[in-house]
Length: 172
Image (cartoon, one colour):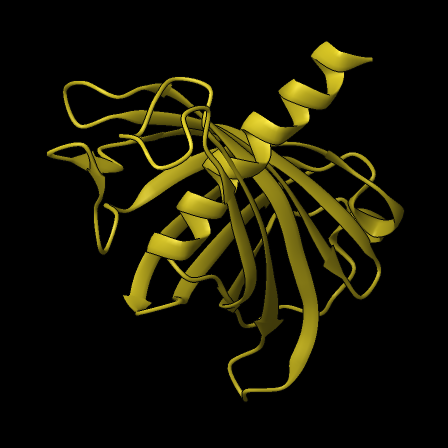
């Protein structure tokens, strides 16, 4: 039970770092059910960071392998309508050469959820979190509801402090 708790804590810290440095934003630009029609589609969202907590391996010390971040962001469409939220965790896997984190994120949207995971590089500069982090791409690993067979990728870029644009490229 202790290793699982530690693993969840590390993942949460990395994700919090990821979201804190690159806010999430969501804009749903395609509302047709791609699952029902068997078509690919692109959804653009804007995420705004709502909560973030970092769980360092060495409290008060420099970033270290195993640090975790947990975060939650609210997602908005292009008309600034709230359409869902994200929640996830990130774990620091490397602190040298710009640092790296592995993140697992769930996007909760009308019609179902999307599971996304991947690496974020260059998150640390000089041992401190970078602001803003560089753009990154993560893979869609699955989903529920209309996203139950979803594959593809999510491109994220910071557009303002605590705010990111997510371009979700769904492949069915």
